[in-house]
Length: 639
Image (cartoon, rainbow, N blue to C red; front, side):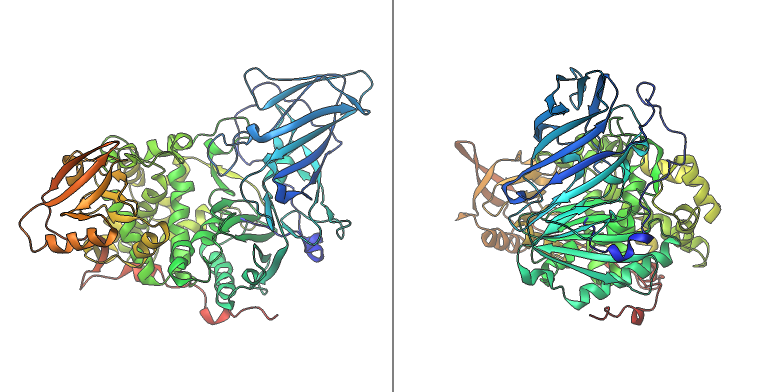
């Protein structure tokens, strides 16, 4: 999530220009003009970052006539057209100090047509950005799409640009970009890169900023850059640094390659600017709440964030589905293989969190139990396949939680997680533990050995071929049955083959307990089919559940339970009493300005998913979670 740029000592080792995408790509909408040999120049001024109004001046080499500049629309990693064009403002184009006539394209609202007079060889674009997220009065994260303009209809890899950034006095700067010298007047100049690499290299800046070297014996170099709203928050627990060092070593062992010249974990710890996770080739943008790494109850919810985003450097950035490997940011992306891009990464991120100490094995199993049960009781799977959730990814992000279980959401994440557990345990079973998913990763992610940040696209056929190279099997049918077909029940074969069974308890496991506390929710999903706010408002009602049969619906509010005014504790007591009662649970429910009575004949108490060990079977999940490198090698770096 964040990347540091304060290490000029390593500048000579950082070669940040991306090679061309290593596969045939869809052509641009019209013949691409030849890229100018003169780089663009972008000078970003964030000296007023806390005011949430940022500025940039961009110099573009041009020829006389009509020039079209554009700003990113389809942002890599977002899987949707999320470019913040609506917040790009204050746009003025000039040449030799004189304003130029421009007009926005009538169809492509991200494009600007500028009339360039004869004799003009460069124009200046001044833009402002209204930025209301990932910024506080003490820190900010610059995502270049907020201020970037560049020539349209040209592969972004072919456009060179020289960036600089000015930040508030005293603020540190972290990024994967290479500084070309010490900062002057709070301005840092960076080496020329492609527009593709610039867009892939966010900047973290903050008043309270600290950089930690990780696994200093490993090459290439790795760093954790931290910015926070309070000075004490950048002083991380040595255990966190040790775990991060283990992560560097474990990924090298598991993925059999590295595809970056150095790597920076960018981390914001803020209750205002947190809540982010975005992958990049040589960095990751990780946003957590202020206490996410210091409070044990929250740690279980955030322990896989950096392991997930780091894994994306291999799975998603280096190896990318061909439909997502577009040559510019105006072409729509095709998400059909997101169950690999995100689903495989979800699985590996969870496994890495356990192998490196961010999760305990119990917490891993608790999270897995919740994921499997939630998917197994998701009615929308009777009409929508996992593949369709991937194809529809750009319209499924966010949205109203009401009836989300019927609509389905970005299920390619969790569906992919349990699918790849199935693959992993199947390979282990069929080869008598002589092989595992790790052998597949060495082929799939390690292809070509260590490289810089390049993109090597793949399709379904290559995926199947790499699995067959790992272990001969009818992988095409295996994957089609689980991904492209309608599957009314979740794929829990990996859990069973892993030595466990999915069952239910009257107490939540550590993952669900932490989630309930953090999100202030009431989870009656696996009992009545309800998810509630603390005041009794229904967030969602599970289709086909008892609550659905009682005609409850999202937005209604439970105001009384069994004759007593609603509270989370009163509802909990009603569940307890239901186990020894033969009468239905009685609710008084408010719907808009009316109230009505609802009876639900339920007597099984609270229900929460857990994994129960099956005696006499191999504990393959335990085997999967074993570290591949010596734990003792991961001591914190000396200060």
